[in-house]
Image 1: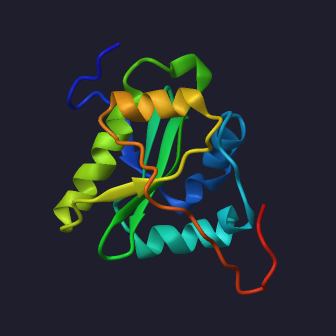
Image 2 (image 1 turned 180 degrees about the vertical axis):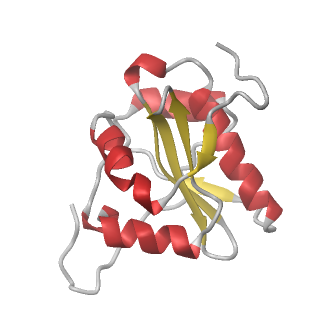
Length: 150
């Protein structure tokens, strides 16, 4: 199914969507949720990044979602997911396009995302929609508690 303008079902992700969006993320292979994905943290992220994260609704059900924001210089996409029964309909690509357009409107032209190395389906998707896999950087993390997050 090709998405048509005005009939795409995309709208801004709201803090009130948290339960339904987290259920979608949990049902999606390759998405890892951590403590930073709790309700208060996601609400804070949405307040800090208004109008850059989106959901796709079909028949009143959230069947796609992407969390997107910026540090002021670069954009970051997190947790793009489309429900199994709605994949290959263009929903994921449309959500990414909408998020990138929102970033562009606020002057952010470069965007990053993280994919688990073993998630070959996601890696194929991202390459198909024009993203480039990098091997020139290493991700390093730190938590204020000093406890590493697995």
